[in-house]
Image 1 (tube, rainbow, N blue to C red):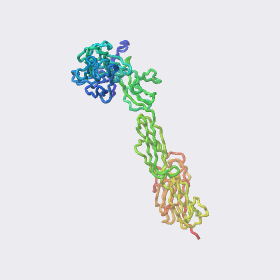
Image 2 (cartoon, one colour):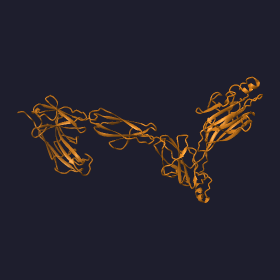
Image 3 (cartoon, rainbow, N blue to C red):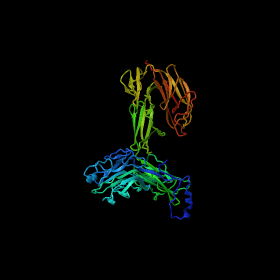
Length: 631
C-alpha cells in the first residue's frame, strides 16, 4: 500500500464559486461517514532521555544513528552546556531529563563564597551561559507546519540576559546558520513541571533548545536552571484522493506514470504530476509539449521524460474536478531511479579451431553481461534468427553445420542493450573420396564434403611421392596400387584409401529417371529407378547422398524412390557402390527445381520400396567397374 495517506473523501475548501454551479459536484464528493479518513500524524523527532549514553563532555547518541549537538556560545565563565540529569524528573514515571549543566565547578558560587562547590547535590547553573542542545529535523515541506511539545521545569533569576532574566528558550533554523526563537519561558521563577506546545515551520532543518544566563551578580547565588523532557515533534499528513501506482526501483529514461483516484463519488477532470529530483529538492510541475499547463487527462498514462538524466525521482499527483482540487500530499506516491545506460554483453567462444574459420569439434559459448547502475536482469540469445530465449547456462554446439548466434542483455530498468552476434562453423567430418571408371577404362576420383567443402585431393602410386589430383597421365599405366585421400576447408583429413589397379571390380549400375525432360517445380514428385548387375560379392553396400548428406544405405541391387518435397534450387544426388575396404565408385546426377509451390527442403518423402531422398538432372547414368589387366 502507498505510504501516502489516502481518503475516499474529497475535502471541500471554501470557494467563491457560485453554489449553484458546484452544488452537484459537491454532493458527489461528500463521503459517507464510513468512508471518511482522518489525517494521520507523523513523528519527526522523539527524544529518548530514558536511555542516556552520554556524559556532560560527549555528544549523546540517542539511537545509535543520530547525535544531539551540544555547545556553549558564551565562554566568559568557561564552557557550559546541557547535560544528563537524574536530580529532577517529572511525575510521569521517567528517571532522566536534560539540564543546563555546569561543566566543572560553579563559578558564581566560587566568586561569592571564595570556595569551590562541586556540582553534586543542589544543581546550579553558571553565569554567561549560551548553551544549546540541537537536533536535525526533516519535516515534509509539503505537509505544513509541525508541532513541538515538551515539558520543562525552570527556576532562574533576574539578570542582564536578554529579556531581563536568565531563561530557557527554543529556536529553529532553515539553513543551519541563523536561528529564530519560537518560544521562551514566560517568567523567571517557574518552579514546577509545565507543558508547552509550539508551532515549528515546515522549512525547519534544525531545532535548538537554548539556555541563556547573564553576567554574575555579586552577593547572589545562581538559580537551579532549566530541565526539559518528553520532547516530541510531529506533523499532520493531510489525506488526498489520488495516488500513483507503484514504480519499479529502476526505470528507463521515460517513466510511465499511472494515476488512480477514488472515483466512486466523482470522476476527476484532470491530473497534474509533480516530481522531485533527488531527495531534498523542491517539487516541480511536469509539463510536456502537449500539456503546457501541466493538466493531463485523467485515466491516460503520463509519459514522464527524465530530462535531468540518471538520478532518483519522486512523484505525487493532484487531481481536480468541478472547480475543486485535492490537497497536495505530505509524502510522495512513488519513487524510482532512472537508468538510461544500456547493459553490455561479452561472448566467449571455446573449441578446437581448424582452418577457414571452422571448429573441428564441439563449441562452447559463454555470455556475460554488465550494468553499472540498475544491474543485469537477464541475458537473451537466439539461434539462426529464431525466438529470443533466456540464457541460463553456457551454450554447447556439437553437430556439424553453420550457425548464427545473436545475444543481448536487459537491465533492471528495462533498457535492452544492443545486439551482438557471432557465427559458429563446425565441421567434424572428413570428406569422402570416390573413384569411377568410365566406358573407356579411364579412372577418375571425386570428393564430397557436406559441410565446409573439399579443397584438395592427393594421390600416390606404389608408395611414391604424394601428388595433387588430377592425375598426371604419365603416371597411370594400369598397374600397381593407387592411394588417395582428400582434405576439406576445415582441415579434416580423410583416411587414406587404396585401390589395386590390376584388379578393379567389374559391375554395372544404372540410375534412371522415370519422366525424363520434365520441368520440375517445388513440391512435384520426382521418381527414379536403379539397378545393379554383375558379379556378386564385389560390392559391400550401396549409398545414396542428396546434397552431400547420406540418406540411404542398402544391400539391395535394385529399387525405386520418389521425391515429393524438393525446395527450389540446384540439387545433387550421388549413387555410391562401396567395397569391403571402404573404397567407393560413384555416379553424380544433378537437377534444378524451378518456381512453383515452395517446399521445405527434403522432408515429407514418399519412398515406395526404399527410404531415400535424391534428385536428378541427367536422364541416365551408367557406372562401369571393370578389371584392367596387363596382357
